[in-house]
Image (cartoon, rainbow, N blue to C red):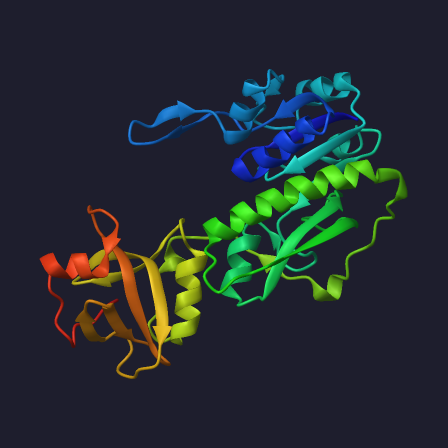
Length: 306
């Protein structure tokens, strides 16, 4: 099948590689313009661009798909279908209508649950037992199109957004290859609007741990915000990032350090307590909590947060 592929991060690169390996004709790859990254803020190509160049595929990086020039480039390809995965640009109706079979999206949730920008993190935050991949026929709405297939992925108790992302990227790659292989036999199913939920974009401010919440909620937050934006709190007024934590049974004034020992920093919550096992002080390296405490003791009774 002749395909235009549109995507940017590693999640999308997995699908691009799978489609190419399946023998499809990737006529054009769309991805976001190179962005500054790393300590030197050097312009860096996206994961999709790197994958495309490694395979010798043509790449285009328009800043928008609304211009006549960008649309003319896509029209000239005469693609059967456009596959979209975490691209980051809005597809106007004129673009949605260009391919013979329309545009298909690889979405990292079981739609209509968790439409929007952060479905992986929101599923963990909510305590969902499962998530998955939906292959969707795109329309002008935000993840509102009819569904071609769903693939269920369980959420493990120790899953972070990073680990779940990798599982879903592989599932998405397999799902889009299967969807294109059975395109003629699949009947799109409309989403149930009454069941829709929205996965809003993440912010650093929301990743600040609120010690008034129950410990199990905060443990999910640590996993959901790993690796970005990163759960954090304040210790003596300075940011302290929390990379790994576990909910335990204990009690005390929320935000108060109950113990600081080889197990880690045990902090009282609105219900139970959270053991901070891996942390990162401002300007420092990520480390085990016991290693941090060896160089900077924290007395029981110390308050974390504002």
